[in-house]
Image 1 (cartoon, helix red, strand yellow):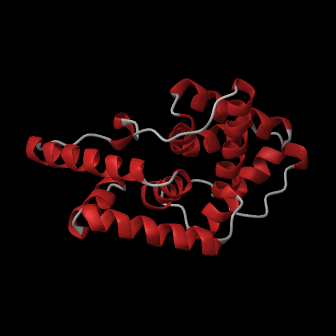
Image 2: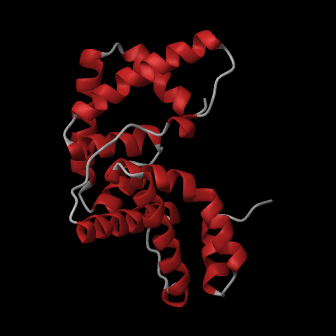
Length: 190
């Protein structure tokens, strides 16, 4: 049986490199996708996530997590990503989700359907205001709860709710609800 996040953090605080490795293994892919959605640059996203885990290791003895571990990591990656962008004098923007992150499908007809659907969804997400698009991706594609998103982005839960309502309204206005549900289920492996 694997350790839960809180147990891994306790072990990390005691100096366990294995605990750090397990946390990285558990979150590195989704954190890289999240950072990439802000930077639009894979290399910069990977650097932000690596820097976050280095800071986590270096500050392990005084580490205090008051939210979920996942929420803490997302917020930390967001902050490091924005710091890196500021250092490079760049602004954040959204890009399409990395195709490799979505996995593969055996049936060529399903693959074609989901490929076309993915393109439509990405086009619609990219038309949303930046913060709304990030919130939508975090909730529907990364599976984060509203409270976690609010903590990560340093906004109220009410703002997250309002942004999600507006995003879903826009999405369903241009795309039948069935297709949107099918896409979210596909991305989440259901």
